[in-house]
Image 1 (cartoon, rainbow, N blue to C red):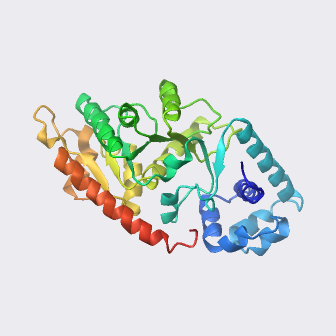
Image 2 (cartoon, rainbow, N blue to C red):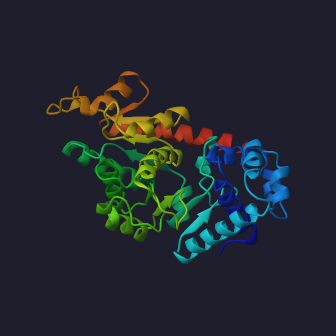
Length: 332
């Protein structure tokens, strides 16, 4: 059950997101700089918002009528009601259940909607497993087995529910009776995308995992926006994890969006190293991303038990450093 204060903040954020020209970056700036004012606001009325002094917000407010802010708040409250009626729960950055890993970066979703177990979003250990939608049979086996081994060691497996590598990551975790989280590119009241994995999404929930999205229910998503959302989703997968492992990726595959974000945030990266497999041509462009990351030493190679343990050590070091840094963050 949401508290009155949390409900007010959620309505506030949703209304802000409806202002022309106000997006995630502006709201992130607002929460980073005005956290105390937001936490202690008696009400989020027009005068309070103007007094916060955020240039983009104030410029947007000038484009709507004086009662326009009240209308946006009413629409936001209706959206929250739709979410609650659909069994969808909501988180904002000041809530304890909000994924704390996301807050270590300047970029974080101002709102999260989820189904399932919120503890899976704040687990002690988490790793993202991503990759092409068309992995080799070897890649499928390795991904499934690695996800299982990590789940057995109490890692929550983070992925995006796409067919191929993502599916293997989720399946491997479930087969090991572990938990897994799917980051989705659509509102949670829409049919799961892709259609092929709707049953998998249900099994994730049945096994104490979670489905999470930054998109509010009751909103239609165009095909063009879906493409944009898929890129945005790739940012939050490593953001929820202590490290990211790419099964297979070409030089220009969609997986590179997730790896690029991991680079920006210094999140440990690993890729499967197939150079040890005699019947795989590791020079094929299908593996171009794997090869590039290994050659540039931006990623650890995964190919045997010792390499897995070495990457777990890297993730542990990263996790400990983040825990130290988070204690100093204004949002925490």
